[in-house]
Image 1 (cartoon, rainbow, N blue to C red):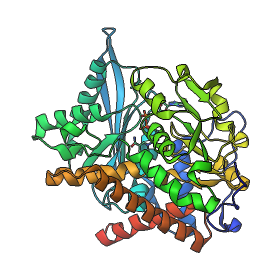
Image 2 (cartoon, rainbow, N blue to C red; image 1 turned 90 degrees about the vertical axis):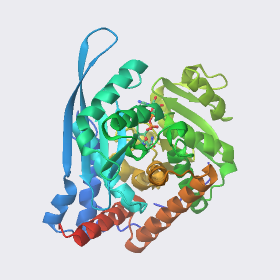
Image 3 (cartoon, rainbow, N blue to C red; image 1 turned 45 degrees about the vertical axis):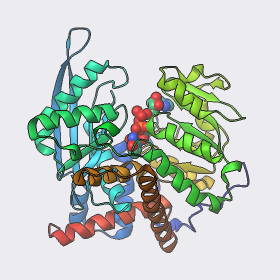
Length: 440
Ligand code: NAD
């Protein structure tokens, strides 16, 4: 590691304007994703001076659909899962957001993720609103048949609120291109062939080149923009990645190609480290073949809790929300926190990172690469046309760099952190379009 960055890295922070992070009562779990997102939203509204009535429109969802998903699993019994689609705000365009399959999914989590999508699409300037969906099923443990049954059942129940100009789903935790293909097929049975109904589809089914790697690649574009400020060059940089799924594994592989040394990686099976660097391309091949991360040769297994404590230049949380919290923030020793996951950092941890001088690139901008290339996929589908991968990646880079420069400029002008500035930019853009439409 080289010398620590200047405090906050994005310019002086007006301490007086920063509300204290809420303290946690003893024994209480760290903040939920919804509490976290609403905390950042409320703080931004205070700074903007948004009137209470407008704030209420922006704070609540436009529509929340909650459905029963009874599915006969391999054990012969019917399991009733719960499925959700939350459409938070559509002022800027059709609702857009991923679909998550995880046992912890509940309405509040999906509300938080939907709201985050509204600000995210506005920050990167693509014409979408924000939405999210989920089913509380163990997506990584179901058989292919079970997954397909859950997916088709969900689509049938929520089909009426979807549409290529209404609401477009995409992959998230434990949902893949295959899941998107089933959704497209089921929607097509009811409405005719409609590839633009979902993004993140397989290439053979009108998916876009570059979509699978887009979120990880977007993170790397932002790393490259910010690195010079902290005196980092790829070949002198070390990185640790928590979560080795779509986002984490692509971010790690693209950083590795640039010459960054990946010294620690984890997933739900455990964590590994190697000071010499982990060959993440080989690790990815092992996992695609069904191997376990902890079986990887050439790296040492460590307790999962120790991963975030590894000293490194860049730490990328790319698993689930709330992973960086008041219980572990004191142990974190990175210079840049690049948020691949949604809501990975609780407000109390965010404040502590600020005090430690860690440069935080927030989720609401950092992981937008996926939705940007989803937008490209949708545009291609509407035109029944396909772009080359280079074109997709170049256009993605342009949008991510522009978003970073705009948010960074707002942070400097207003004396805010990147997260505070990003929320303000996003909220202001959504409020402007809602006013133009005349409903606030
Ligand atoms: P994924 O299902 O492909 O991967 C999730 C990874 O996290 C897996 O490797 C899993 O084993 C790991 N994991 C789960 N629990 C863990 C734990 N306790 N410790 C360490 N690792 C753990 O999901 P994904 O699509 O890569 O999404 C990851 C995060 O990125 C989520 O927060 C998601 O909302 C966010 N995100 C995804 C996209 C996208 O395009 N896929 C876009 C923006 C944001």
